[in-house]
Image (cartoon, rainbow, N blue to C red):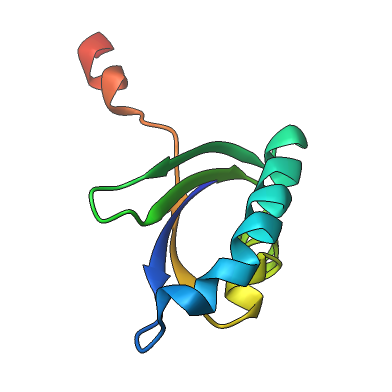
Length: 94
């Protein structure tokens, strides 16, 4: 299954709270991307991370996101949406 995960920063944190965790975060994300779990990663206009994950189920996606250093440190969380294949093209062939 595919999931869309959009980062939300937890309020009340400064950039210095993030600094010691940014390199471990990047390393962890890189490892997940090499394994094919994180399929795509972007920043939106507010510099929030936007990830496309491929996992067996929602619980696994949550566990993977919870393993990220910035999540573990209570600096960010993710809003997760399950993605389903688009079937609208079938309307063309009725």
